[in-house]
Amino acid sequence: MLITDATLPDGRTRDVRIEGETIAEIGELLSTTAEERSIDASGKRLMPGMIDVHVHFRQPGYSHKETWASGSKSAAAGGVTTVVDQPNTDPPTIDGERFDHKSELAADSLVDFGINGGVTDEWQPEELFARPLFALGEVFLADSTGNMGIDADLFADAVSRASERDVTVTVHAEDARRFNESARERDDADAWSAYRTPQAEIDAVRRACTVANDHDARIHVAHTSTPEAIDIAADAGMTCEVTPHHLFLSRNDLPELGTFGRMNPPLRRENRRRKVFERVADGTVDMIATDHAPHTREEKDASIWEAPSGVPGVETALPLLLNEAREGNLSYERIRDLTAANPAAVFGLSNKGRIEAGFDADLVLVDPDDPRPIRGEETHTNCDWTPFEGMDAVFPELTTVRGTVVYENRHEELFGEPVGENVRSA
Ligand SMILES: NC(=O)N[C@@H](CC(=O)O)C(=O)O
Ligand SMILES: [Zn+2]
Ligand SMILES: [Zn+2]
Image: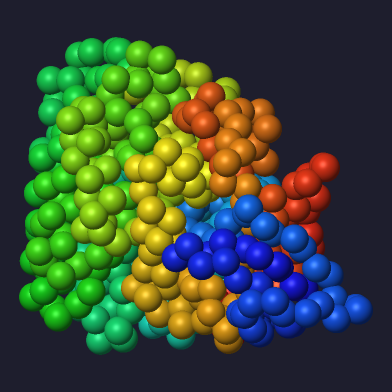
């Protein structure tokens, strides 16, 4: 395939040739061969596919919420070419057999994937470390969906074992001792944000970073929602991610969202959201990861204390960021770093995350000046709603995974074959 006249993240206009699974050549005025498909990308932006290191594709156990097939279609339609699945499935991914079972299910994936291993009292670290494991995590320092919260001793033990193997530990950092019990008396949607306080995250991130440094280990802090926690992680030499919902939504949106805005950690006040955005824009935050956590409408339609936590996001993350570029609030290079180059560097995916000769041809082509409003029912996840309903976004026209077209939307939407592979198995 030859993509001609594409504008790259750094602003250069180039032709990009894909041969087999890789980017073969980047140049000017490359001539197309007879058997090669040629795509005119003049006026279009070509981005490296997003590497989303935090999704919940729900298999095994909750395939009514999502499957590898539906989740990866949603990913492909949103320009995500690699996903990393978290372990709070049923059964949880905490031993070798369960890891192997999830690997078989992931054969349905249209996009490349990593599989994380979880930590509970019953986990089998040696079995997990013998598998093509992406990372440990998300390790829950407080209960979230799946009730996999663990205590400080088990966390320290897991960090020390991971450090010996040079494996990163992705941490869900909230400290339940800092939750505000008095918020329990309320029943409005904002009560969840009042209950799971900023301080619960800040304290847990500080403690997790100390444990990591004590063991000469590396942690990656999942879904940081406060500027304070981001700064603590950065100062400790650790990495962190921010979700699209903590970047684009705040407690101001809860009257409208209701329980559809309940997630862990919860939405914060507008003032904190703005400071989180600044840290995303200035590079303090390493990456955007979606924490795509689908639940059905029926499940979400409950009281604020009964509804499950989590929102979908894998299909809308890159499109929302590209709309920020269109509006001049983020550069395309920053978006490349946040969604592709940095996650690849942090997690050691040396063939991914950049548009350079020799790299995997994981590519996304968009018309940068053609936004459309996000509609939950048009997304491809099993959960047909979105917390970003009506917001402008720039969706892909074409997504390739190692040279195979997995999504195309010119006149109609077309999906490719499940070509996804485990990024640690190669
Ligand atoms: N973020 C959430 O609110 N929910 C996630 C779990 C998690 O990431 O904590 C889920 O799996 O539903
Ligand atoms: Zn979490
Ligand atoms: Zn999660």
